[in-house]
Length: 252
Image 1 (tube, rainbow, N blue to C red):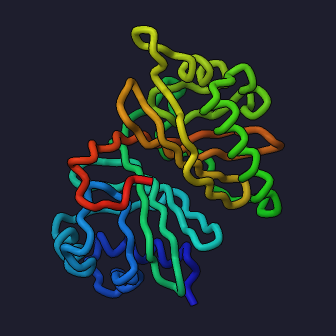
Image 2 (spheres, one colour):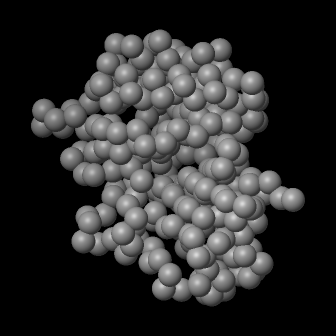
């Protein structure tokens, strides 16, 4: 039997090939779509894949993880332009039944010469999965949401490797961005932590908030080592206004 990690890869590779068997990974009777720009039930997934494959898309997996009923991946898409994406699927009985994503145009390198998706990719420390999940949740709630940036050093390595295209390496650069203001208002506001997915030394935190006053979705992938975040990747996506949603399931 295929693992959830393998099912996710087979499904998304179907975007390239138009393979109807890839679409069979999904239980369309139960499938809940959380991308607000995607209709639900208006077009069968096999038909959708067949149509999209004619545009010669490319799907490149950078990191793929599995966590209980979930599989999640860090992906580069080439749909006429390059995009960085996080894809999250929930499975029941070997079929995908729920989907979330967060996609951002690929940019960079940043001031430290790092791309949005390069860097460490080896999953390790599986015995620390729950420890890293718990400390990531604490970091987001205590530091990002409550804006206790004086506590950053309790969670983040001084020489943090940074892949956000608008940031540079190091804890001081991160602190400067998080504390940044525009016309007296914070640029980045984390308001709610929706999901924490983990495998070993990697943890993906899904958050809601605002960037420059715009309702936004923050997907932050952290790599932990010796109790500190040593590497960080992210995608940030605007959440469309409610009247523009094509389904009623919500982004989160």
